[in-house]
Image (cartoon, rainbow, N blue to C red; front, side):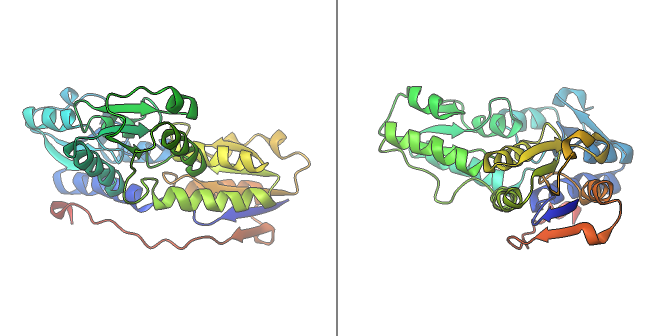
Length: 306
Protein backbone atom coordinates (compact mmCIF):
# COMPACT_ATOMS: atom_id res chain seq x y z
CA UNK A 1 0.00 0.00 0.00
CA UNK A 2 1.34 3.40 -1.01
CA UNK A 3 1.08 6.30 1.44
CA UNK A 4 0.79 9.78 -0.09
CA UNK A 5 1.39 12.89 2.03
CA UNK A 6 -0.27 16.24 1.36
CA UNK A 7 1.64 19.51 1.38
CA UNK A 8 1.09 21.86 3.06
CA UNK A 9 -0.36 20.18 6.14
CA UNK A 10 -0.40 20.63 9.91
CA UNK A 11 0.46 23.71 11.93
CA UNK A 12 -0.24 27.15 10.52
CA UNK A 13 1.42 30.38 11.68
CA UNK A 14 -1.49 31.31 13.96
CA UNK A 15 -1.37 27.97 15.78
CA UNK A 16 2.42 28.10 16.15
CA UNK A 17 2.12 31.59 17.62
CA UNK A 18 -0.64 30.61 20.06
CA UNK A 19 1.30 27.62 21.39
CA UNK A 20 4.48 29.69 21.69
CA UNK A 21 2.64 32.37 23.68
CA UNK A 22 1.51 29.82 26.28
CA UNK A 23 4.96 28.22 26.47
CA UNK A 24 6.77 31.57 26.77
CA UNK A 25 4.31 32.80 29.40
CA UNK A 26 5.01 29.69 31.50
CA UNK A 27 8.78 30.18 31.07
CA UNK A 28 8.59 33.89 31.89
CA UNK A 29 6.05 34.02 34.71
CA UNK A 30 6.05 30.43 35.95
CA UNK A 31 3.22 27.94 36.23
CA UNK A 32 0.34 27.96 36.36
CA UNK A 33 -0.73 29.98 33.35
CA UNK A 34 -4.49 30.02 32.78
CA UNK A 35 -5.81 29.60 29.24
CA UNK A 36 -9.39 30.49 28.37
CA UNK A 37 -10.71 27.49 26.43
CA UNK A 38 -8.40 25.23 24.42
CA UNK A 39 -5.68 27.46 23.00
CA UNK A 40 -6.00 25.43 19.77
CA UNK A 41 -8.35 22.56 19.01
CA UNK A 42 -6.00 19.61 19.39
CA UNK A 43 -6.01 17.16 22.29
CA UNK A 44 -2.31 16.25 22.01
CA UNK A 45 -1.22 19.89 22.03
CA UNK A 46 -3.40 20.82 24.98
CA UNK A 47 -2.28 17.76 27.00
CA UNK A 48 1.35 18.74 26.35
CA UNK A 49 0.71 22.30 27.56
CA UNK A 50 -1.08 20.99 30.66
CA UNK A 51 2.02 18.95 31.49
CA UNK A 52 4.11 22.14 31.22
CA UNK A 53 1.85 24.12 33.57
CA UNK A 54 -1.14 25.43 31.62
CA UNK A 55 -4.59 25.27 33.19
CA UNK A 56 -7.50 25.45 30.75
CA UNK A 57 -10.59 27.22 32.06
CA UNK A 58 -14.05 27.91 30.67
CA UNK A 59 -14.76 31.02 32.75
CA UNK A 60 -12.36 33.83 33.62
CA UNK A 61 -13.65 33.77 37.20
CA UNK A 62 -11.82 30.44 37.60
CA UNK A 63 -8.49 32.30 37.42
CA UNK A 64 -7.27 33.90 40.68
CA UNK A 65 -7.13 37.71 40.78
CA UNK A 66 -3.86 38.98 39.37
CA UNK A 67 -2.99 35.76 37.56
CA UNK A 68 -1.88 35.50 33.93
CA UNK A 69 -4.44 34.42 31.34
CA UNK A 70 -4.01 33.61 27.67
CA UNK A 71 -6.87 34.06 25.22
CA UNK A 72 -7.08 31.22 22.68
CA UNK A 73 -6.25 31.48 18.98
CA UNK A 74 -9.98 31.64 18.18
CA UNK A 75 -10.45 35.12 19.68
CA UNK A 76 -12.84 36.47 22.29
CA UNK A 77 -15.71 38.92 22.50
CA UNK A 78 -15.46 42.48 23.75
CA UNK A 79 -17.34 41.41 26.88
CA UNK A 80 -14.63 38.86 27.73
CA UNK A 81 -11.92 41.49 27.40
CA UNK A 82 -13.88 43.83 29.65
CA UNK A 83 -14.38 41.04 32.21
CA UNK A 84 -10.65 40.26 32.24
CA UNK A 85 -9.85 43.90 32.96
CA UNK A 86 -12.46 44.05 35.73
CA UNK A 87 -10.99 40.92 37.36
CA UNK A 88 -7.48 42.37 37.34
CA UNK A 89 -6.03 39.64 35.12
CA UNK A 90 -2.82 39.97 33.15
CA UNK A 91 -3.75 38.98 29.61
CA UNK A 92 -1.76 37.72 26.66
CA UNK A 93 -3.84 37.58 23.52
CA UNK A 94 -3.12 34.53 21.33
CA UNK A 95 -5.92 35.39 18.90
CA UNK A 96 -4.76 34.55 15.38
CA UNK A 97 -4.02 37.83 13.56
CA UNK A 98 -6.27 36.67 10.72
CA UNK A 99 -9.15 36.36 13.19
CA UNK A 100 -8.29 39.80 14.56
CA UNK A 101 -8.57 41.07 10.96
CA UNK A 102 -12.19 39.88 10.91
CA UNK A 103 -12.85 41.58 14.26
CA UNK A 104 -11.54 44.86 12.84
CA UNK A 105 -13.73 44.44 9.77
CA UNK A 106 -16.78 44.06 12.02
CA UNK A 107 -15.87 47.23 13.91
CA UNK A 108 -15.39 49.17 10.65
CA UNK A 109 -18.61 47.90 9.09
CA UNK A 110 -20.66 48.67 12.19
CA UNK A 111 -19.12 52.16 12.31
CA UNK A 112 -20.37 52.63 8.76
CA UNK A 113 -23.85 51.81 10.00
CA UNK A 114 -24.05 48.40 8.37
CA UNK A 115 -25.65 45.29 9.78
CA UNK A 116 -23.42 42.23 9.44
CA UNK A 117 -24.09 38.64 8.49
CA UNK A 118 -21.53 36.20 9.87
CA UNK A 119 -21.14 32.93 7.98
CA UNK A 120 -19.97 30.29 10.44
CA UNK A 121 -20.76 27.40 12.74
CA UNK A 122 -22.96 28.16 15.74
CA UNK A 123 -21.19 27.50 19.04
CA UNK A 124 -17.67 27.61 17.64
CA UNK A 125 -15.47 29.87 19.81
CA UNK A 126 -14.28 31.89 16.81
CA UNK A 127 -17.87 32.63 15.86
CA UNK A 128 -18.78 33.58 19.42
CA UNK A 129 -15.78 35.90 19.60
CA UNK A 130 -16.55 37.58 16.28
CA UNK A 131 -20.26 37.92 16.97
CA UNK A 132 -19.28 39.47 20.30
CA UNK A 133 -17.45 42.36 18.63
CA UNK A 134 -20.75 44.22 18.40
CA UNK A 135 -23.59 44.38 20.90
CA UNK A 136 -26.21 44.35 18.13
CA UNK A 137 -26.71 44.40 14.38
CA UNK A 138 -25.24 40.95 13.68
CA UNK A 139 -26.79 37.78 12.26
CA UNK A 140 -25.37 34.26 12.04
CA UNK A 141 -26.00 31.95 9.08
CA UNK A 142 -24.59 28.44 8.62
CA UNK A 143 -26.16 27.21 5.40
CA UNK A 144 -27.61 28.31 2.07
CA UNK A 145 -31.07 27.63 3.54
CA UNK A 146 -30.29 30.00 6.44
CA UNK A 147 -29.23 32.70 3.97
CA UNK A 148 -32.41 32.35 1.94
CA UNK A 149 -34.61 32.67 5.04
CA UNK A 150 -32.68 35.47 6.73
CA UNK A 151 -34.61 38.57 7.76
CA UNK A 152 -32.64 41.75 8.44
CA UNK A 153 -33.56 45.28 9.49
CA UNK A 154 -31.56 47.12 6.85
CA UNK A 155 -31.09 45.13 3.60
CA UNK A 156 -29.49 48.08 1.78
CA UNK A 157 -26.86 48.56 4.52
CA UNK A 158 -25.66 44.99 4.83
CA UNK A 159 -22.23 43.32 4.91
CA UNK A 160 -20.87 39.84 5.55
CA UNK A 161 -17.83 38.25 7.16
CA UNK A 162 -16.90 34.58 7.53
CA UNK A 163 -15.32 32.22 10.00
CA UNK A 164 -11.70 31.75 8.92
CA UNK A 165 -11.78 27.92 8.90
CA UNK A 166 -14.79 27.21 6.69
CA UNK A 167 -14.89 25.08 3.56
CA UNK A 168 -14.02 27.52 0.79
CA UNK A 169 -16.61 25.98 -1.54
CA UNK A 170 -19.37 25.88 1.09
CA UNK A 171 -18.75 29.50 2.07
CA UNK A 172 -18.91 30.58 -1.59
CA UNK A 173 -22.35 28.97 -1.93
CA UNK A 174 -23.65 30.79 1.14
CA UNK A 175 -22.21 34.10 -0.10
CA UNK A 176 -23.91 33.57 -3.48
CA UNK A 177 -27.23 32.93 -1.72
CA UNK A 178 -26.82 36.12 0.32
CA UNK A 179 -25.97 38.14 -2.79
CA UNK A 180 -29.06 36.78 -4.55
CA UNK A 181 -31.30 37.71 -1.62
CA UNK A 182 -29.57 41.01 -0.77
CA UNK A 183 -28.03 42.42 -3.99
CA UNK A 184 -26.46 45.39 -2.19
CA UNK A 185 -24.59 43.31 0.42
CA UNK A 186 -20.84 43.93 0.54
CA UNK A 187 -18.04 41.65 1.67
CA UNK A 188 -14.58 42.15 3.20
CA UNK A 189 -11.86 43.72 1.07
CA UNK A 190 -9.98 40.42 1.26
CA UNK A 191 -11.49 36.97 1.87
CA UNK A 192 -11.73 36.03 5.53
CA UNK A 193 -10.96 32.32 5.04
CA UNK A 194 -7.31 32.11 5.99
CA UNK A 195 -4.42 31.20 3.71
CA UNK A 196 -3.71 27.98 5.64
CA UNK A 197 -7.30 26.77 5.37
CA UNK A 198 -7.34 27.54 1.65
CA UNK A 199 -3.98 25.86 1.02
CA UNK A 200 -4.85 22.70 2.96
CA UNK A 201 -8.19 22.37 1.21
CA UNK A 202 -6.56 22.82 -2.21
CA UNK A 203 -3.97 20.17 -1.29
CA UNK A 204 -6.51 17.65 0.01
CA UNK A 205 -8.47 17.97 -3.25
CA UNK A 206 -5.35 16.84 -5.12
CA UNK A 207 -4.79 14.10 -2.55
CA UNK A 208 -8.34 12.77 -2.82
CA UNK A 209 -8.10 12.49 -6.61
CA UNK A 210 -5.21 10.00 -6.33
CA UNK A 211 -6.14 8.22 -3.07
CA UNK A 212 -8.88 5.70 -2.37
CA UNK A 213 -8.87 6.66 1.32
CA UNK A 214 -7.79 9.93 2.95
CA UNK A 215 -6.87 10.12 6.63
CA UNK A 216 -7.01 13.59 8.20
CA UNK A 217 -4.98 13.94 11.39
CA UNK A 218 -6.86 16.26 13.73
CA UNK A 219 -9.23 16.43 16.67
CA UNK A 220 -13.02 16.18 16.39
CA UNK A 221 -13.28 19.70 17.83
CA UNK A 222 -11.13 21.16 15.03
CA UNK A 223 -13.24 22.98 12.46
CA UNK A 224 -10.58 23.10 9.75
CA UNK A 225 -9.77 19.39 10.22
CA UNK A 226 -13.43 18.45 9.81
CA UNK A 227 -13.64 20.56 6.67
CA UNK A 228 -10.63 18.70 5.19
CA UNK A 229 -12.40 15.38 5.70
CA UNK A 230 -15.57 16.74 4.08
CA UNK A 231 -13.65 18.16 1.10
CA UNK A 232 -11.93 14.82 0.48
CA UNK A 233 -15.27 13.01 0.56
CA UNK A 234 -16.82 15.48 -1.87
CA UNK A 235 -14.02 14.71 -4.34
CA UNK A 236 -14.89 11.03 -4.02
CA UNK A 237 -12.40 9.54 -1.58
CA UNK A 238 -13.47 7.81 1.63
CA UNK A 239 -12.12 9.99 4.43
CA UNK A 240 -11.66 9.62 8.17
CA UNK A 241 -10.60 12.00 10.95
CA UNK A 242 -8.17 10.55 13.49
CA UNK A 243 -6.52 12.12 16.52
CA UNK A 244 -3.71 9.58 16.56
CA UNK A 245 -2.43 6.46 14.79
CA UNK A 246 -4.13 4.08 17.25
CA UNK A 247 -7.54 5.22 15.99
CA UNK A 248 -6.98 3.86 12.48
CA UNK A 249 -9.37 0.98 11.81
CA UNK A 250 -7.67 -1.70 9.66
CA UNK A 251 -11.04 -2.33 7.98
CA UNK A 252 -10.82 1.13 6.39
CA UNK A 253 -7.76 -0.01 4.43
CA UNK A 254 -8.86 -3.46 3.28
CA UNK A 255 -8.11 -3.77 -0.43
CA UNK A 256 -6.77 -0.20 -0.61
CA UNK A 257 -3.70 0.46 -2.80
CA UNK A 258 -3.22 4.17 -2.06
CA UNK A 259 -4.02 6.05 1.14
CA UNK A 260 -3.57 9.81 1.49
CA UNK A 261 -2.58 11.57 4.70
CA UNK A 262 -3.02 15.21 5.63
CA UNK A 263 -3.43 17.17 8.87
CA UNK A 264 -5.48 20.07 10.12
CA UNK A 265 -3.83 23.36 10.99
CA UNK A 266 -3.81 22.55 14.72
CA UNK A 267 -2.30 19.04 14.40
CA UNK A 268 1.45 18.62 15.11
CA UNK A 269 3.73 16.84 12.65
CA UNK A 270 4.70 14.22 15.24
CA UNK A 271 1.17 12.81 15.02
CA UNK A 272 1.34 12.78 11.22
CA UNK A 273 4.59 10.82 11.31
CA UNK A 274 3.11 8.27 13.71
CA UNK A 275 0.21 7.73 11.29
CA UNK A 276 2.61 7.42 8.35
CA UNK A 277 4.80 4.92 10.22
CA UNK A 278 1.77 2.81 11.10
CA UNK A 279 0.58 2.77 7.50
CA UNK A 280 3.97 2.20 5.86
CA UNK A 281 5.56 -0.05 8.46
CA UNK A 282 8.52 2.30 8.40
CA UNK A 283 9.31 1.53 4.74
CA UNK A 284 10.27 4.80 2.98
CA UNK A 285 9.81 3.20 -0.44
CA UNK A 286 6.05 3.21 0.20
CA UNK A 287 5.92 7.00 0.68
CA UNK A 288 5.01 9.68 -1.82
CA UNK A 289 4.13 13.38 -1.57
CA UNK A 290 1.95 15.94 -3.28
CA UNK A 291 3.42 19.40 -3.47
CA UNK A 292 1.22 22.41 -2.92
CA UNK A 293 1.58 26.07 -2.01
CA UNK A 294 4.69 27.07 -0.09
CA UNK A 295 4.01 28.77 3.24
CA UNK A 296 6.42 31.22 4.84
CA UNK A 297 4.03 33.25 6.99
CA UNK A 298 5.08 34.04 10.56
CA UNK A 299 3.35 36.09 13.26
CA UNK A 300 5.28 37.93 15.96
CA UNK A 301 4.82 37.19 19.65
CA UNK A 302 3.69 39.91 22.07
CA UNK A 303 6.66 42.16 22.85
CA UNK A 304 6.78 41.15 26.49
CA UNK A 305 7.29 37.50 25.50
CA UNK A 306 9.84 38.01 22.73
